[in-house]
Structures are given as structure tokens and as C-alpha cells.
Length: 340
Image 1 (cartoon, helix red, strand yellow):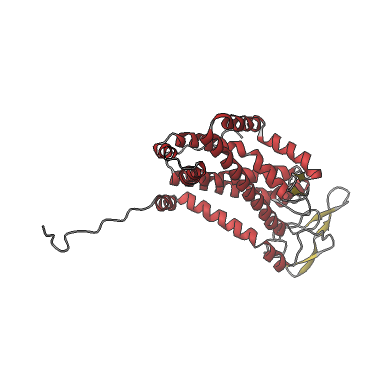
Image 2 (cartoon, rainbow, N blue to C red):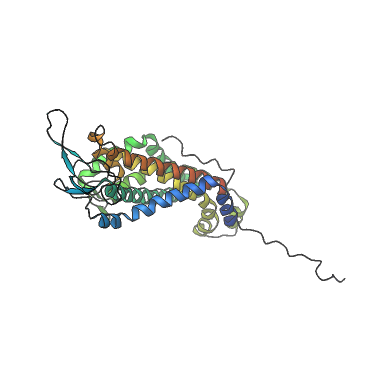
């Protein structure tokens, strides 16, 4: 049988699952906009050293006697108070001039804009690294408990139940109070009390049960699937089944958890730093800047409002992005963190 030339059309190439998910995500305008906002915030924070050098300011050094040039006049950064008996000094307010105390100064004469960028850099770093810690340990525990079952599942599940029994903020505050003075010493791993790795470790650990339990449930379902049972029947080693068959199937869940956990970790870090048990001086974060501006709410509210607004925008962008990723990777997924 002969086929006339040109009567056969090329078979359309099917898209892979990742390409399909990317296409769904790009169709979600809210998620794309949220991703743009988050990337913009990250880029601005990464430019913190550039901004500080351009503005010729050190956001970690008190400058009580500094003078700023505004509209052709030299204005002291710390102004004599005009309230009550006129005692004390009030920091200069926002000049709205980029590179020239744009958001004003705090009670130590430091540039709030420069501190906002540096604080955002630390907040994003802690939230991101704590998310890596959470997902790493949660994946290990969830895979082991769901795949091997038996006594291993019992021990891991009871351990997760113990962590789950503590309210997350109470557990984080308790660990921070205990470790903030003496640091953490785990033999080969030592974390100094003022290190950023301390809040990273604390925040990363307290959220492990909230990720490990959904992973365990998904692995339990995959453990009974035909392709896993066939691999077990053929004598394939357990580690190969976990790495090649099960882990790729839970990877979409882990990806969805990334922005969700980053948002939760950022809020937790800000709360701990506001209570002085998170990021320690001379480092700064958005939580510590809010604490610095607590006593200036009535005179210079922008000191506390600026980092608060930054937290709200970043967390909102991460949550919208997380919803978009969930819908793109698995529209039927009902991932929820649970109680917090």
C-alpha cells in the first residue's frame, strides 16, 4: 500500500510533566507577579552593600553627630527634642532622597534604608536556609517512616508526635532562650551563640513535623503502588527504589513546600528577633529593626513600619507563589501545613 506524499501530518510532540507545569504556572498571572515581586526584593537586598557604599553610610555603626545635606542646608541626623522639657534627641525623619537617609534614621543615627536592605538579606538567608534544613530532615524521616514501616515508622512517628505536641512558637522560643547564651555543641558541629546558623537550625527543626507527616503519608501510598511492588519483587535494593522511584514522585510536594515554608520561617525569624532571641547584634534583620523602632512609633514611625511592610509584601508574595506552584504541579493536591 502506498501513501500519497503530504497526506501524513507530523505527530505533535507531547510535553513532559515539568514543561506542562511551567506552562500552567506562566498562565497564572498572580503567581507570576508574586514571583516577580519576590525576585525584586531579593535583588534589592543583595544590593545592600552597593547602596551602603553609594550612600557613604555604615548601617551598623552609631552616627549620633552626623550631618546630612538636605535642600542646600546641613541638618543634624539627631535633632534636639522639641517635646516636653526638650530633653534627648529625635532622629531625622525620611528625606525621600535615595542615598541620603531615604527612610530617616533610627535612635542611633543609622540609615534605616541601608539597615532595611541588610536586614532583609539576613531575613531571606535565614528563611531560605531554614527551609533547606526543614525539607532535608523531613524528607529523610518521611521516606524512612513511610517506606520501611514497622518499628522504624513507630519510632519516627512518635518522635514527630512529640515535636508536634509543642506549639511551634513556644518550642522555638524555648530553644532560642536555652541556646542563645551558650550556642550549640553537637560534637563535630559547633554553632556559636551569635551565629546566624543558630536561628537557622532552631527554625528549621521546629517545622520538621509539619512537612515530614505529609511526606510520610505520600510515601505510604507509593509503597503499595504497582511499580514499587514490582521493584521490590525483582530484588532492587531499597536505596535505589527510594532514590529512583519514590523520591521523584514526592519532589513536586517538596517544591510546593519551599515558598510556603519560607514564608512561615520568615515570620518566625522576625518574631524571635523582635524578642531579642533571634538575630543578635551587630547583625540585623527585619525583626530587629522593628524592635529598634518600637520606641519611635509616635515620632518616627517609618523605622518600624518599613520592615513590617517588607515582611507583609514578601510573605504575601511567597504564599501566592506557593498556591500557584501547587496548582501548576498538581491541581488535585490539597497540601496544607496544618496547625501552626
